[in-house]
Image: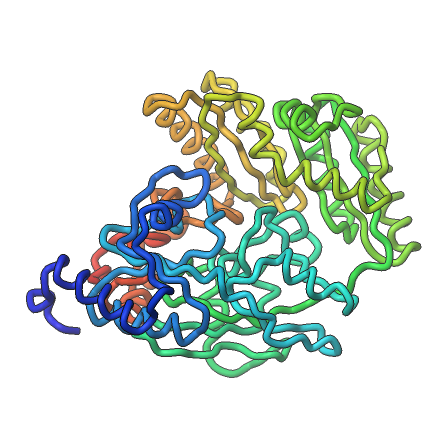
Length: 474
């Protein structure tokens, strides 16, 4: 690696690389203030910084050109998809280029007989499922927002259906990745398993754009279930609801989704999403999928467990419109809380524990919320031990710090119960402080070694995912 003392001053490097980018990519490069402002942050974590330019890539070769030029000039690059990440993943560092992949929306290949497809990274999962409509197949990973599939790979996304179909980790077969120096590599393939070489696909899935930029994704598809049924069950007691969800999983019920919303969240969602037929008390949302006989068996077992735990009876949503209404309300939970408390700030956090410890965690978190003097909503994918807390606080620095203090207590509880600081939001900037406690310094040292080996000039989303340390040269 060249000695840093010979690298030109930042202003000269930026001027040179902008000129080169415009020479090679023309109108795909924008320095317009409003365009740069739109790429200065994601959702939730409000830290923002303007990039020096936004490049709208349309091909893998465009991405390779950008990285080769920026690598040569030591200019940081941050990949940008839909901007829906919540932990600061897409906030640029100083003097960075934002590389927008949202124009890369081609479905390159659909192999219906083998139940897989290959897509460009800027395609959203909603658009993919629209294009798969006539095949009898669909892609099930559903984080809720209008996320791109490349971004979902980068953050190892999951969501409401993960309890049944798994996360991006289980549903990605292979990738096309552009390395820091512009080299293009392919990982994995179309086969369902392989015993050859290092598992590079898993290395890049969840790397948050710090090791390479994903431009194409080979995805596992699933058959559309013969029958779908959805139901809700309300509980007077939060612990009863959590216990029901845990027992459903422990009983081996192949449930498609099981989501929890506590009393605070339900009050917000009833008002925002028009669920007036429901009470503002803890509620479980269920979805059952499969052959009719299998669905009937799942329902019988689940309903019996809910009744044993003081559930107040099932309300059914069997038509597509009714099901969509329920799941739209669940996906709009963050906005429902924002709307219920105008003028406040809402901090979204998540953590995950083994399901046997979920009840202890949620009950403890509820006590932490009450002790903090803040209001917060609890919701989540309780079937896999993952839940979110939406912390409501005053929109000022003091309120923000109080929310972060509560967040630290919530994550601390999860880690003390053999959990993780994030089940699906990822690390970005927002979760950096918890990485050493969760993984330990020796493991972080191995991660830093990988980072330095693959990105020796530290241009790929620097400062994200991995706390700085001795091996972090750049």
